[in-house]
Image (cartoon, rainbow, N blue to C red; front, side, top):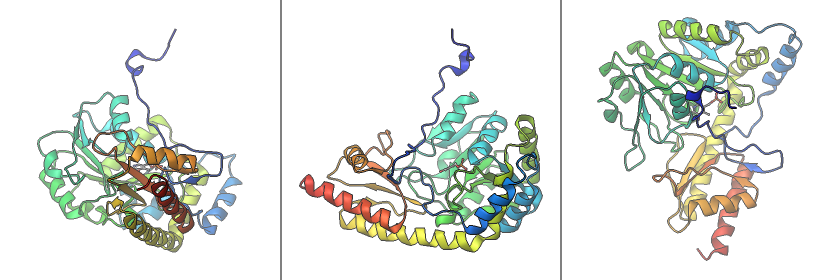
Length: 351
Ligand SMILES: *Cc1c(COP(=O)(O)O)cnc(C)c1O
């Protein structure tokens, strides 16, 4: 006897990149290879002393720090338990007229669409694997896309996004800036020009806190208030005490994040050149990962072989991108090992 609601029995859940207990070179989930700053670790230790208390349901210190960082009002800031939690609330509560998103993008959009049984449309990327907002003009309902997009690493300009939002004032336009610190220009400064624009962000990538679960949304106070109504109808304490303290400390020690982000961008460019020397085609990335293909190599075969060398990257089973691998940017040393493993594979296969 299966007790799960019949409507939910066909759900396909999200497939996360593998986590491993063994020592591997982990370049498969776009985590940050660097630990959080000492100031963040200190904040964690202090907050842990208060774990007998519930966390602040308003997340006030974190909301204020985010407002200051992004130069918006605190009433324009929502905080959730990872951006996946924020996205879940958005799909649950803001998409009754349907949702459009890129056919190739972050896998969770489709999972939430199915979970909340929403009508939706997947819009193909163009031949250069880019999002074209003009292709989203014909539908109604909410639009959501990642900028830069994943797994391609390609972004579009905020000017283009704002123009699209202004042209569609009755549709909510959600921009997922999970990788926004790695090279794209944020649309946040343009929020005042379009009240139907909402930006979602995360502390999991540039801020080194994937394991803590902090996500946020920035936008018009009315949207933020509605998000809070939903949050307080699910779980007012969804953001825990340690997360609030560490998130705040991370924003206060922004110099550390800027420095490690700059290091990752440098590593990304060095790795790009090294892979290009091996005749890989590397899409110019604006994120903390590379999306690469090689005309003489089957991507899945290389993916499998790298795994035997304890190097984990990501391969996606979709016809338009099945000859590509997504490789997260790790430390210089990890990337050097990846490049040398690719070289070794090519030599062994006479390529
Ligand atoms: C990683 C990622 C997220 C999820 O971030 P969390 O805050 O860890 O839940 C959301 N959107 C995109 C595009 C991502 O790559």
